[in-house]
Length: 84
Length: 84
Image 1: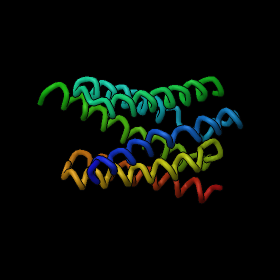
Image 2: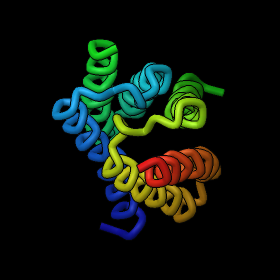
Image 3: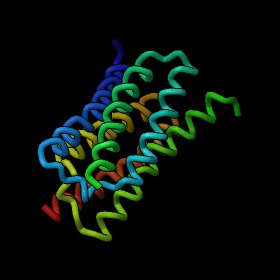
Image 4: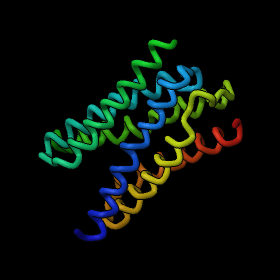
């Protein structure tokens, strides 16, 4: 694996796994007041486009990374709407 | 411009601009309790890797999108640390 691919994998891992502590914190505290509903609506739509982009390119890493991020973003969006 | 490029641009626009309403909400309410510090630490590191990936590839859209996201993510991280 070359340096560029390694940096890309670290990038995808970072921006995908970052949402896990946010999901866990909401489940633990049920506090979503500071979280922007508009952010997660736009972000989720953006991730759907990234996933479509990956499917159009047939790029497996883009598809996998964005499928995981989509699940996490939808979870945060759902918890935000549920907690008001 | 072909469909794939258009979908990619919509994706990058969505996941970048999504952080603007979050920044504005924090400035307005100063409420960051629900926001995960760990999320924004990992996310910011991930974006630094995406930026490095864009520089290594010489890919201008990746560089531009992630430079903007980096500024927004660092702003949220700064406001989270400032507000405790």
